[in-house]
Amino acid sequence: MSATTANVRDAMAGSSASSPQPRSSSAPSYLVAGVLFYGAVGWLLDRWLGTRYLAPVGILLGAGLGTYMMILYMNRLTSDEQSTTRTDNTSDEESE
Image 1 (cartoon, one colour):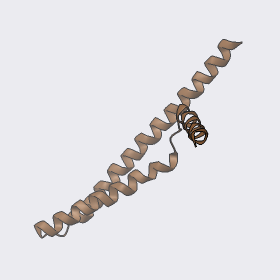
Image 2 (cartoon, helix red, strand yellow; image 1 turned 90 degrees about the horizontal axis):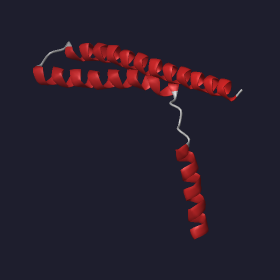
Image 3 (cartoon, helix red, strand yellow; image 1 turned 45 degrees about the vertical axis):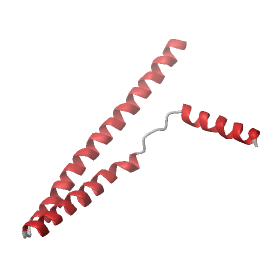
Image 4 (cartoon, one colour; image 1 turned 45 degrees about the horizontal axis):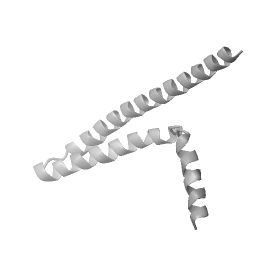
């Protein structure tokens, strides 16, 4: 049993040592989450205040904020990839 535990610990230590790369597939989740969250807040406010326009306003606001967050995420992802590429190129040049 202890050999199995040691193998699992070694595998977990190896997987945590390598930094996981962010996935670009999580970027659209900002848009979906924004629309759902702010649409629900608008709907709740409509029910509470007796209005009919806050749910569409919330959906539009959520779409705008979600798009903004998605653009920020993609820019950060792109800049991280470029800095990694620059670091790799620099280390290759230094080793020659």
